[in-house]
Length: 539
Image (cartoon, rainbow, N blue to C red):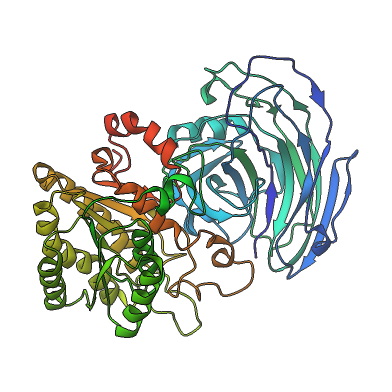
């Protein structure tokens, strides 16, 4: 059961000129699914109560609204927590990554970070970062000096900005209990100069772009069933560190649009593309996207003849002029990969793009869930063999032909956001490791074959419903039910943009098809000079 006492702040990620300071009484009511918790409140007195019995998720509470006298809002969001554990739940051991600690208000707090992917937020479904400070001894009343947490988080990538509201709230999504809470404190509207940093905040108060606030709280009737109380801060435009790069560009896309439309990336010369694992899902639509981009030759492979027949028919409807080589190939068998290569060379004599797409995830457990932890993932070897070693087999055979050709010379590996995860709460450890591994293969290839003109990319295809992911969700409203919001053809469209011309500045790097390509291109100099979008150890 999850219980939280929450302060929430949200707003734009820009600083504003210094302006007036004014006190405000409690003037904001947080009421998300309050009917599930018998939510009652007295705004003037700063009190509220809640009681529940195995509810759905609810968030209720009181706080303050705040805003900036000027500035604009971006579309990203971050969440920040200073948690008061009561019993069992600790997000730092439940998926978030522990990065440090801070001492404040009579206790040590663990600091950890996490990225929410395509989850509900104040701007709708979005991908956003989270910072947690988890108190190491429990209490039922006290003061949280928020500035201390902001100062500590700044060491790990947190950057201050403007906020929309600040709320002390209770959240639960299971169990049975009740809460009676008294909230006190006075909010202040502030403006900061653009060069203000977290270290400039008053030591005794939370003094961010629009708030100077040290809230106090007291909750009665805490039962042993409470798992924890926490403070929650939600803000637009935060750069999260460490980060998965989910919001590397300010604009995030969930469907093909404009420059990623294959119709805008048509080729007008000999251009041959090979796609492994093309029978279903992403590979199927990657092949279709290249057909729409008017390539002259398509090599498609799958382990099933019927899937190849279906794809061939679709391709011919899209582009009747494309020359199609369809061949059964199991990438766990080097002899199959060799035969596919030989057939490609004999048929076309060249290759411009090779997409190593074939991949799997560990088999579901008896209860229908994905394995969590190394002790439950008994499909480990098969996943590594297909996802990681399969990529090696394809690269080993096809890269020489790419290098010999006078075209794009692009080797693309389909990776995943999971490559960044250090836990298996969402996807199994074998899958995560295999997807991290192919990113390192791409980095190695970029160095080893730089003189040959080979370009290699590791591409995250988005959060997509495919035959492989469609059964991940176990119940309505869980993360898999809400996260898979990108269209299945987005990846293929994005790849036609990527390979339309040689993009040496992205060679050897992790990329995501949700990124805005115009904004990405504008960052070219920064990406090269700072050697961004690569996996590195922080020391």
